[in-house]
Image (cartoon, rainbow, N blue to C red; front, top):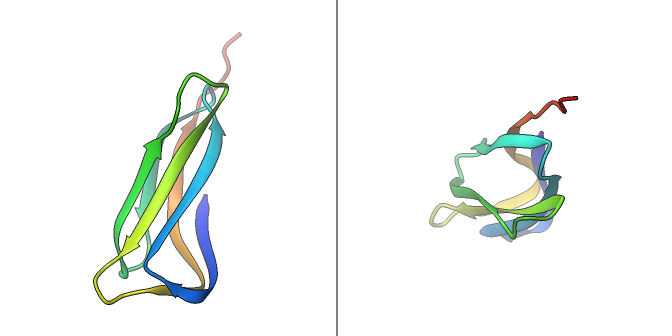
Length: 84
């Protein structure tokens, strides 16, 4: 799934929360696409709910910024099939 930034000002750090069903997805990972990004992390927030929050954070390298509309990363995951 693409992670896209739309900004009219230069940014050096971007953070967002993504909520996903806890029992339907696994192997969640980020693949950055821009050389300006030196750090990209995904962290699981509170657990135990049917929908779990994940915090995505991006930081640029020294003297770099992000501006305009651009794809930052791909969010990769696998779906879990419901068994009957």
